Length: 271
Image (cartoon, rainbow, N blue to C red; front, side, top):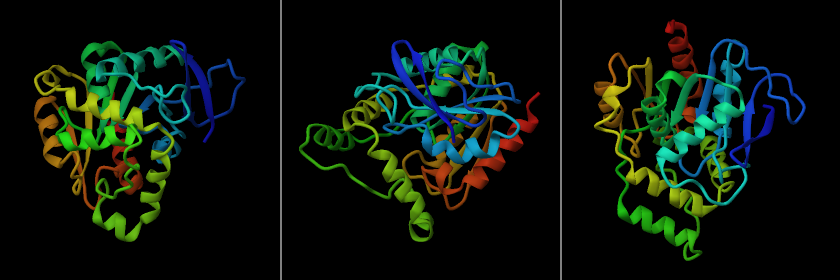
């Protein structure tokens, strides 16, 4: 999967795509089919979307990027709010010369996508919301644990609660993959991301979204339970919900074929 850097508001932003490579200052060809921008979750990066990039790139122009301070993008500080991240998404699209795109968001990325659709409707062709919520139920002790890690008072936690029990038992490579991605982002960024998620509340606003919307939820997700996706479906007119068995919060890497099939069917329905 080719990667490149682009300057976005003074940040060197790393992104993933499929297609011919280009010179450093030349934007790749994104003229195939639909432009799809994939936005990752808290403390993550764009690489775990690689299964979706690979599957969709034959007919479309998908791209996944690392937010500031995440993955291989520059800096060790993230942004402070979902709103700031949504604004930054728009600046990234400017850098790639995307006037509009389908916005796909996973977990925190889903909140970013919804906020973006609310404030930049003309730039949002459709939404794909994966394992996300309009509000996140994050306990205070989770924030305190991440603060301790950031301060060097506790080690990073490598846990399996984001996965389906079946994934842990039968596909531990998916768990290892996500653990490997976790260490690519500074703990202080994970801390500020989770704080941003705890503070966001889009429950009263998302009914104003008037874009085609696909919601994909894992039946075994305990971080953003299926009820969170049901709520979003009830608020966004015409939204479709796919509940995937044997998948948790890490559904794009747990059940990539199912996720890809859902997205391809959704794209086929768009006018």
